[in-house]
Length: 104
Image (cartoon, rainbow, N blue to C red; front, side):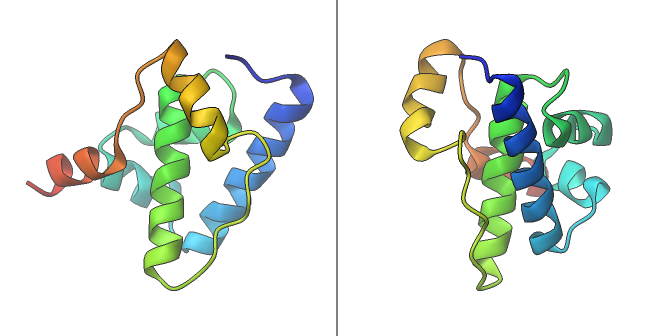
């Protein structure tokens, strides 16, 4: 599963908007999900990122925004319907598993 140039641009903007809504920095998100800031930035840029990192960052930002009582910006490509297709191509990391590992 790969995104077109248009889909990558839209996803990049959607992730950036949700990062802003979350109130987190790239470093904050990286620490929370247990991957380096460079990997989080690549996921946010949807450029040179591992696809599972893009989904992990997406899911983490959504979790933070919702836990703060907000509503995340809707994703045009990283939809719940596309999650099943993505899982057919590569393993997705559950955000709860990652957060539990980084807390423990």
